[in-house]
Image (cartoon, rainbow, N blue to C red):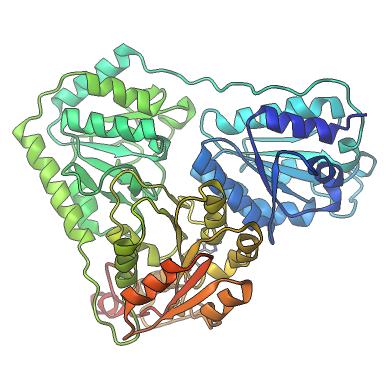
Length: 550
Ligand SMILES: Cc1ncc(C[n+]2csc(CCOP(=O)(O)OP(=O)(O)O)c2C)c(N)n1
């Protein structure tokens, strides 16, 4: 006798997917049973937000749909942060949700939720499977939809009684994703626009975060002397020491850099949806009518021309477009060379923020520099959301080869779960997660998961006793009126030890290099508590400087 749940497990395997992150629930016991002894690894987490974040990070690492399984109502609501993140970050995610039994549906049963309503507007597809024979087919569609076009989240709700029904139909194989290739005509049109431009800017986004994408990016940039701006959290896809590096289009980058980039006379946006952050609040390019011609290349036609009037929209694989563009000849004028040089000088100057001596704690940059000096060059780098990440953007030696994960959608709490998922996917690599004292308390409990699965991340906590990012905004808008942004923290080193990690504290006056050496020598998970300066509120500006300006 084969249950729908057994067939689902076979179908998951047939899709080449091998790992599910979960918090168990009584609403999907048959699936848990079907996974017993199966080839699929079940990673048991401590919060559905953590499980969802791990699935998102896993998808970022594999390029395939991440899988998370959660219980109905409370489990699904906890997991919703990952659904939102997968939507904002264009990451394929399939959330398997247990649902109340079919005879209970619509009666307001225990923990019942209508997922169509709950996730409407966030997920690409939301399906509740009421016929057991349709479960494999619907799962295959869920993976297909999650991975195609603009990747994103899909919800598969499974009534608990349906999972136990007997089925006879076979497992469903993978439904391959169609990739639109670029036509010679479109590549030629792009090259023609480029030939007329003296100050072109190539804005490269997350869809190029593959070996092929990175190689094509470099090839096209070099072939045409194109300065490359990298979208938020994708600073790692192009060598930052390359003369064509034009900067990272992240949050709160100094106005000087944006002003320079706005002088572009052509923007070629490739592999990005041109959202709020990389466009610096819809100013680069300007919405709805850009101040310069715009070429926009993205796999999903629906993402092109929605917000910006686009001179040449190309719905195609971004890496193939850059490959095709690189093949077409271009004369790189002296003006273009000078333009690229100017952008490069500005970007380098801004990244050159030497650590300073602060009275109230460590400059977080000094710790990032010490880790960059000592950690293997191919370490996987995770950044949570918060101002501490500004020092990672400035000081990590991004050479275009490393793997990095951060939340484009700005969700705090990604770091520790993403670090666990990265250790599992790449047990041979060092995984370093940077996180604030705010973010680490949101999902840091997944350190328990790390220990249970033998993951050995290095978690670096910037302990500045404040929700620093918000404090920065507050100081700009309401100087000196600190409200709702202070934090009273535990001893994070002791907290790490309680999970079985090595706990290390670095305070002002300590020998940072030797503490980092101690951390990296440890064969197990590590929590480094950095007692950071609050005054140094970001790599670019201090609280006193903000107050002096206002
Ligand atoms: C889940 C979530 N809640 C709230 C926010 C709003 N937010 C953005 S950054 C931030 C503060 C981050 O503080 P911390 O982790 O301590 O890092 P810091 O900025 O101090 O370096 C907050 C509350 C968010 N982005 N995500």
